[in-house]
Length: 550
Ligand code: B12
Ligand code: SF4
Image (tube, rainbow, N blue to C red; front, side):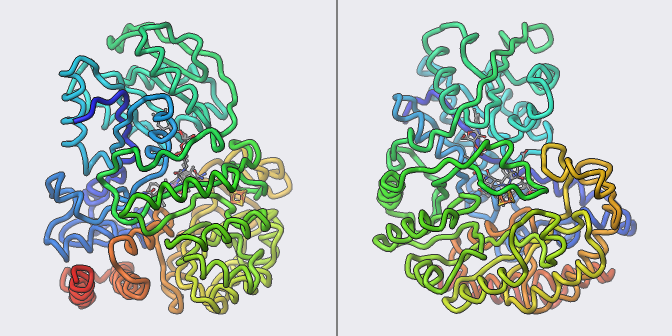
């Protein structure tokens, strides 16, 4: 077994379904917006769509399984996340060895084994938790508590998107109380902290002081109530895209099936009025195409890898760069998924996408109403979207249209424009998200014009309030028959993950239609574990397992 400097937890099973299940079912109208249509009530509790499949297939929910069984169950966090693998890749060039724990809840036995091995060999590894998918400290606290059962003296570091977001409108000193409460030793809060992380590990290894490391807050020892708290200088770093050599095949990735994620760009050159990404990412940064190709070669050297999910927010912009990427992709044999700005797709691009292995794309449509698109500063029209999707359909590339509902200016009519768009465009999948109001987004500058007040998920403007949205989502969910609903919290990754697990796109469509039909009836108040759709799902799962095995 190898000795590691860092154990990095990329993801964990963070949604507390048992919490929802403890709520009284006869009062579901009070909390329906939290559970529907994203969950199914099955065998006495609310379940994720994937966990319904687990129970029907294996007769066990994910939470009831042993770690090994969990690794073989369906869970969106079993899909390899990017940040852990990327950080391991970056650090390897400095001789720093990272053990990536992809999903803590599926791999905690392995974490314990690796940690104890390194500790018994005389060097306790630092244990990092990625907060990228967290929206509060709750999950950090849970993990830290469990980790300290392995070793109360463990050194725990937190980094990732949530930690970064905490410093956007607040001082890094605000971490102190949370670090004491959650028993965390270090927080690295930079948007691109790779170099700071390298410095932290090397300084610690040499027993040197940490005060010159940027973007770090730390407690001087494990006495969390009284230890001195320190905050180092904050400094912006550009992404390390061109400073990350392709060392993918040198990292141990036992959790890998067929799919891996990568990015070739960080940031975004657009400035949609509801989005904070351009302001936090500070501009568009690209990887040189020659290096992208080297990464691709190394990734595809990992024999199991057949599919890549590209995380670039606007993968096909700039268009010429995208054409260059497609030319490279065509040389290799793999399939891929990505985000796509579909208005920049013409017949030739769609054909090249297909020929280079594109299976499906996430379309940030946001709204199919020209009036709302204008308010959002999306710089696109409904007609442009329809035109682009037509090209994708011609070449059999599936798409998932993502909509943001309730943006300032939204009315009953503009919402209905989404309905007709979904039907007309023929997108195979769709998902709805409610408008989320953040101060560090362009819409905040126009709050007086829109009469926008409140914050986050609780807002009000001249034409709507947040409470109006959920009933509309349910109405639309019930009406849409031509396209398949996917939960916004899992979106394209749900499709890519099931595809990774051996399900064809048609099988995914069939399964999801059945799940949605159960949700539909539950919204009407009809609950039964003997719903005929569960039988049909069982039959479908049987067919898939048979062909996946052969
Ligand atoms: C892929 C993805 C998903 C997938 C993940 C599937 C999978 N198995 O990978 C799915 C669809 C499931 C998902 C779900 C959600 N997501 Co999401 N997702 C992303 C996305 C597109 C990519 C994440 C990624 O890998 N980024 C690339 C890496 C390099 O960036 P990073 O993780 O931030 O890592 C960098 C640093 O933060 C740091 N770092 C990361 N981890 C660590 C750890 C340590 C110790 C250190 C030192 C540093 C460090 O180093 C990295 C390199 O610079 C991002 C948007 C984006 N472009 O990042 C959103 C994003 C992470 N998601 C987000 C959100 C909010 C969610 C959801 C809560 C749903 C929602 N409302 O949108 C859910 C999760 C919970 C739930 N209820 O189910 C937010 C997070 C905001 C936050 N935490 O403050 C993001 C940033 C999008 C956004 N702007 O709104 N998501
Ligand atoms: S929504 Fe997408 S395209 Fe628009 S600014 Fe945000 S990341 Fe860029």
